[in-house]
Image (cartoon, helix red, strand yellow):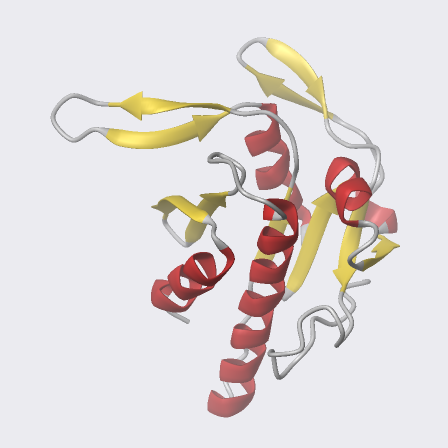
Amino acid sequence: MEYSATSTACNRNGIEKIKTIGDCYMCATGIFPQQNHIVGIAEMGIGIVDVVNYWSEKTGYPLSVRIGICTGQVISGVIGRKRPLFDIWGQTVNIAQLMESKSTGNCILVSESTRWRLREHFTFEPVPDVRQCRRIEQGGDHVREPRAAFNVLASWAQVPDLSMRARSCAP
């Protein structure tokens, strides 16, 4: 899958692309005032999983994607003088990256804060092996990751225009 499909999903859901780092596509929502931005990023994730599943089935190649979503505050700004770049930093970014790294193929892991905000829109299931809390370093401070992580299980009613649904990611 190329990044153009991801960019299309961003644009359709009002998500801001921040940057790409290798095979990682970092994006954010809620930076600019917008309604239902948290639902938009979840729908974007489901759409990306659907596209990857479609191309995997169509080509016969085992394609997969890992997605991590965390909700919270970030620090944002422009860095660089010759080539200024907009970027975001903070515990929320670190936890989203951690969620992505612990995710399995074609799975969306979300933090407890994200699950709470999306509870009326999506169905979730706990992921037992991600429940262990460990410390992560952030600028010399110790930050605890969320107590639990959850898979997003969407139903047809939430995103009717997508042909495939995100499947359970339980190990």
